[in-house]
Length: 103
Image (cartoon, rainbow, N blue to C red; front, side, top):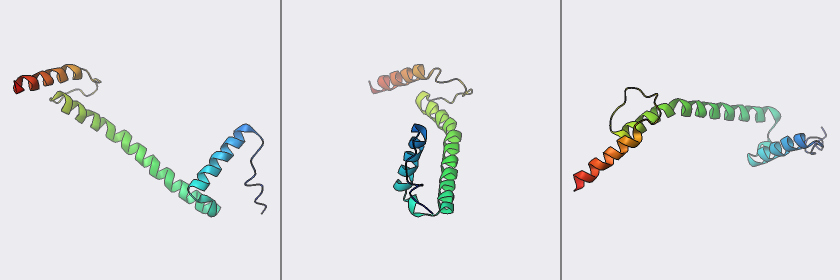
């Protein structure tokens, strides 16, 4: 197999961009020393990992949002769909309560 075809940059700008990204990716992760099936296996495992991570973050963020509102306002809201309604007022009243308690 002629390796000069694989590592030779293409002529079009878009293909050259993709080629540069591929070369950077392979050389950074040392994938250039693996065979084709090993590269596919490693990239597939990485894609599955990142996909699960993104799904986990997406599913966990609403709970994190609810807990943040609870800790900032001091009361548990019945309707969590309202986005930050009353948080500023609750923070002001909480701060006012803290200030009067210290006096």
